[in-house]
Image (cartoon, chains in turn cyan, orange, green, red):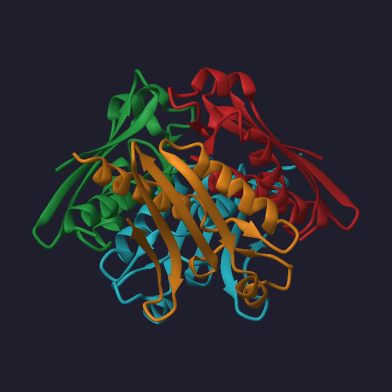
Length: 110
Length: 110
Length: 110
Length: 110
């Protein structure tokens, strides 16, 4: 297996994991920052990760927030990017809601 | 602690657990039946549970399904009822999406 | 439904939710503090919660940590307490691993 | 991006997702079969998946089961394999607990 293939595999693991671990998490304006940082910290621990950024869409949060001032994290609110390095092979992968497909699309840049 | 209070506590545990374990699960028309049955089986294993029913809203599923013919389970698609018995104290608790509150409301009947 | 019964139900929801949302989360010594704070922040958002404390057992963490310097959160590592107030009815509920039962026991003090 | 790289990425997504969606799920001898089938059904829905097999280790289940006759799914109990096909590029990926590393290792065959 080539390093680049390994890097692609590892990047996929990180995005799949992030998405499914955190769907449903209670989030509101009071805790959105700490939730983003905690999510990043969970990705950063994992093998081959050299960078990560997680962002919960504040506009969507505002739209979806309940009468109780928070909501459960849903796919349309989550953006993430992760950089994975295996030797000198570096890939960047993204998770982003695609409104047209109605799907949390995961993509990779090599 | 009275039996009825214990039953209320236990019913709450079951609904909180069900909701947060399964948010984000991939669901489409092909697997919605088995997913419902598996979810029920998970509740049924737990202490004091005497009955359970889980239902994923097919209309919502149709609305939310992606171009890839499935979606991630979101709060607005999930209905559940659980009966908990502690001695002769029996309670029925419900989880149901409330469109006005934009919230997965959990209620109890005693 | 009496206030005390409602408080018991709500306390159960919070503990069941906390446990099942966060099982499997990547945790190591580098992020255990932020993960605990983020978990508390998620509980604090929810209706009727007046206090919360989450603690991941450092000794267990040390025992279970992988060669990659982190592990996935398992039931034996998690301690939580939550205070719920419905009017003047206040209950404290606890989640604690019971080694003898091999079970994450949830209890309530009224 | 080559097809083989895309296949590796997609395989990673599936294993990361499976692991983190289902950690903590209540499982006992009564529901282990339906839980395995439901987990497989969730993987099968996802893009590019051409085969999947999920297996919960019965010996581990027996060891870890609580006094209440079930337990929460932990990393050491879960085995999975998934086949992903992108055009004529086919990869098989595995998730298997590694006792020495104390880690749910994910690997790929190309």
